[in-house]
Structure formats: structure tokens, C-alpha cells
Length: 289
Image 1 (cartoon, rainbow, N blue to C red):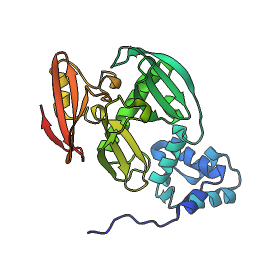
Image 2 (image 1 turned 90 degrees about the vertical axis):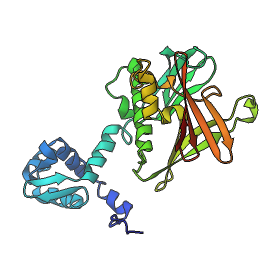
Image 3 (image 1 turned 90 degrees about the horizontal axis):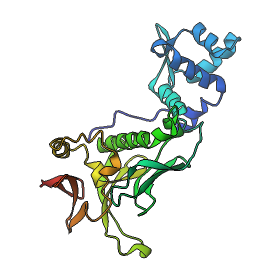
Image 4 (image 1 turned 30 degrees about the vertical axis):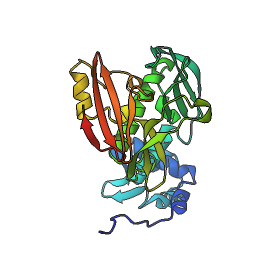
């Protein structure tokens, strides 16, 4: 096995300690706002508003080679510095917010009941008020919703969910960008819901940080070429239809074909036609019907 090209030079605690002073955070923000994320010493000092040149140089030195680098054009924001500013802009560290349950324009895909949107503790839940089916449940940083009106939040959440699943399908953790392992996880109904069928879901688990997210089979395979082509044949663009219309969380849209080896299927419907994908426990497509 070849050696990894990545090595840890600085302990995480020491790296983040470099951001302990507000002047240093202001430096990163000033570089972010500068053309090409690059500025001279004097331009940076003016932007940050530190009169003492020596004091400013001290703070700048704490950022060098980790969050900021120096070249012939001056000081430039490194990728780590950009990620810090990005995290601040996302609101993950600096913002909070909540939205009381509000009705959505779309009806429940299972019973045509009223769908509701709720956001609290950085988590969105889109659910049916009539049959209690949860179509989407996902953590969303507050900054994602900045600048949008309340009625736009369901659509914004949908796009965010699509992006999250797409990134996981490409093999990158949405938390630390480590390698993702995908597998089928069969949901077992709780004791008070024994009449519900066992539903196969998809679990994405990061091999680096251990973070995991769960998605339904319908969402997981929505970008599959056969699924896209099937819907296109019915004049349906899967990117333009609400995501919850494809969510597979019932016995009609999913099926456990075999327990050992585990094989499950997901069904997409358009008009009177159906498309069925059968996959194994590692999400490899075995058959398209």
C-alpha cells in the first residue's frame, strides 16, 4: 500500500489557538474580501484597523504558513483560511435561528395530506401533518437560509439536501471531507409501529470522523442515468420536481428482495409506468427493470 501524501504537522488544538484573537480573524476576513484574496502588509493593516505596525506583524505571524502565506504579491489566504471564513459565513459558529411549523404548498406524496416545514436547533423536518410521514430530515447551518423569505425555505432545504447526498455519493464526507462508505441499512419498525414494513435505507458513514447520514433509496439514486432517462421520457426533469416526490419510505416504493445476500429495490413511478432498480448491500446496481 502506498503512503498517504497527507501528514499532520500541527496538532488541531495548536492550529485553532492561532485564531484566538479577533485581530487574526479580521485578517482572514480582510483577505477574503481582497482581490484574489491577496493584499500587501499595509493594505491588510489598514483594512483591519491596527495602528501599531509591530503588533499587527505579531498577529500576522501567528497565521503564517497555516492560514496565510506570503508571496511576491503580498499575503494570500490559504485553503485553511478560506475554510475558516466559509464556516463563519455559513453561520455554523455565529448564528442561530428557528422557524415555527408552517404549511407547505406541496401535498404529501403518500396520502396527499398537508405538508409542514419546521426548523429548530439547526435541523429541518418536512413532514405530513396527516400521516406523520417524514419526507426530509436534515441538519442545515443557519447561514444557508440567510437572505431568503420564509416561503422559500422548503425549496432551499431541498437543494441543500440534494447537494449533501450528491457529495456523499461521490465519496466525500460533508463534515470533514473524509472517505465515505455506503451501505444498505434496513430500518426496523418500533414496537408501537409493528404494522409498518421494514424499509431499506442508505447509510453514509465517514471512515475518518465517523459522522453518518441516512438517505432513502429514492433520493440516493435520483441522479442515476437510468432514473434520469426514465423520467425524461415522461417529460419530467428530476431537478425541477420537489425532492419529496421521489422519497422512498414505504412498502410500495421499496422492497427487500433477498436477506442473504441482501438485495433491495426502489421503484420510481411516472404515469402508469414504473422503473425498478435492484441493488446489493454496497449499493451496486444489479438490475434495472
